[in-house]
Image (tube, rainbow over all chains, first blue to last red; front, top):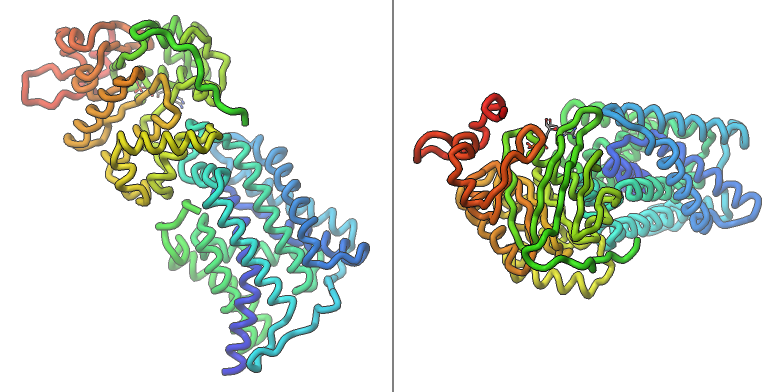
Length: 292
Length: 269
Ligand SMILES: Nc1ncnc2c1ncn2[C@@H]1O[C@H](COP(=O)(O)OP(=O)(O)O)[C@@H](O)[C@H]1O
Ligand SMILES: [Mg+2]
């Protein structure tokens, strides 16, 4: 029982970070109907930037978010403007899969060139410290990462629900033609939306680098987990993907603890298959789909 | 994001506000409009009728800027519109309510109406407009927090009309507002349209339901094969035997008048 609760705590904390990564991916999908296969690579890029800021300048990994987030926001805007926006025609969805996958490979290649392919880890002094709460171990890094993810998700929610820009994003998601008629600049919304999606990857990446050993190829594993979460959440619903991330985090954590860590990774794919077979519209069905 | 210019010198009541002359336009290579001449005077409702696919929606698009006229002129209060972006035309006070459902289904009624003033940056002004619009369309206040997608078709159309007033537009382009509505909502929509001109607004209306459209309009125009074939007072067109035969349903009373009764062959000159 103790082990089970411990696994659930660990799963929730990990799931929060996945929720952050997945929310960015969902935002991009919602606005542009594009499955961004580079989201995992952007997370790894964020992790390496954090690594360099930490090892070279001694910047605390959590604080480095202040730098990595705006930087990847810009990367996202440029990727959208230069590579996604010029796509035309009826097969934009398919073409964008290729383009975003190419972006992922380009990032992987550049990182391999710069850092090599050995596994690294960002290890601040507090990396291995933990609190004991009611007899349960709570890692400091995991806890702060979870809280940080919640704060950033709340910020994203606030932007979407309460700002004029957010309203123009939701309008574009729900009825692009009508939004344009009212004066919304869809191309600007897309660029900023892609930027925000990449920014969430940056923030999640800073944390990811402390929680996991990683190398430039880590994005393959990440993107498959992210796709599982996003599909489970019902493509296009941020709330859905947050819940799906927590569910997946807990499920794989329990399986790792009760069976073996290797089966924990496997959980994601089993769940993905089950969802695609049984509930192809995600846990929450079509009701929330496409509304963000 | 410049502040919008709602201030363009409008002509006097009854004088030409919108003028199309020799307008040609199309999608890609072919021409859909082949020289459209049409004048809409300030304070008028002009109803454009014509067979399916005649290019009625295309005419509205050349006015709102979704499409640029290839040839000819589109003038608004004497200003050439052809070179202006859709957003700039919004700024002049031209609002386009498209044919398809245009609300944001996952946003509340209130947010939808607020989106009508998206190009305005003056919050106090937007708040004032919201109050005015709510007074005029009580449904906006009543269903304020409902998701737009949960409203009936008739209710959605009323909210669309309410939203179109948020910019206090001089010219409203309405594309088939009564399409797909039950008779009661249709009556309500035409009543709302009739009221739009009360404060000096001008309406260019496209209607499939030609009888009701012409009845509410001051003038009507018939679009055929990419040209305006006939114009006249709404009441005159309603009594015109040719128009009656083609667009109002040929046979006697009792039958619902339907425009699509005009088969393409019948529409040919
Ligand atoms: N986006 C478009 N692309 C290509 N052709 C179009 C498009 N919209 C309309 N058309 C064509 O233009 C013609 C006129 O369309 P439209 O203006 O919508 O007619 P109406 O509103 O009178 O029914 C039709 O033949 C239609 O098929
Ligand atoms: Mg039409």
